Length: 271
Image 1 (spheres, rainbow, N blue to C red):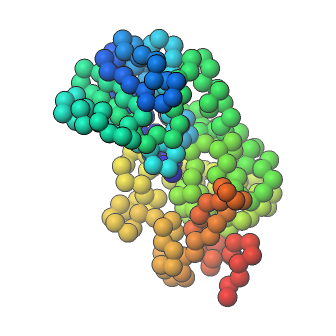
Image 2 (tube, rainbow, N blue to C red):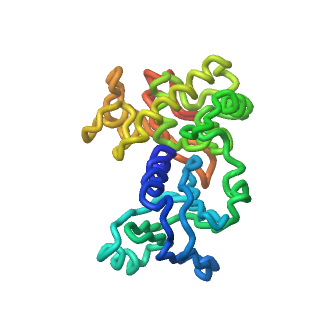
Image 3 (cartoon, one colour):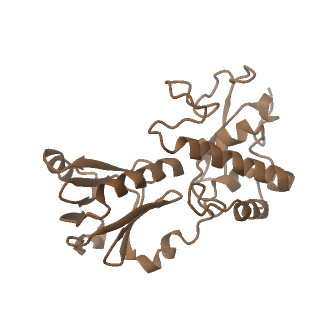
């Protein structure tokens, strides 16, 4: 699933293309939303909130979208590309100005709500890791209050918004923390250090199209452990593991180096 850095960059691109411009093409292929006509409105701004996108219009409404696993917003110049986009079966939304067309493909969620009521769709989220209002103290408070493993706390968007399996795996590896450490064992300093590390990694990555935690964007060098199951750890050479965390049906994959991070997932032994 696209994570907060991808959504931040998507919002920046949509904002640059559409903000301040009148909508001349609009189509929402999503249930009852198909009857709503956004033509004539002007895009005020497009912002991200964790893994959510908020496209605000001067008419006082917001188009809210979530990419889920496979969604994307594609921006094309008006012309032949627009015609092709409209013909796609996986098109769920299209917003176009006189110059640019934004096509929402395979979106996992789409809502049209009054801007003043955005809390209906994002009010449950914790502090946004890449938000201008990032609040380390509040994020630390929420993570500490979470009764469970630190990895599950990081992936719970109510703790902090924008972290998925990529940044959870990478941040925990860099800090040499076993994902299945109880949050109560981190302590105040450890909690703040982990959150600061994840914020720093994501902030450094957000401006780049190719996701990377290492700073090296060559193929195969982008991550420390994520996507590297059975390959040697970049620190110690021990094989990287992939395990599941969470409870069915919402289990997710987490990558670790058992040697660097001091252990294995619950129920897993070294043999």
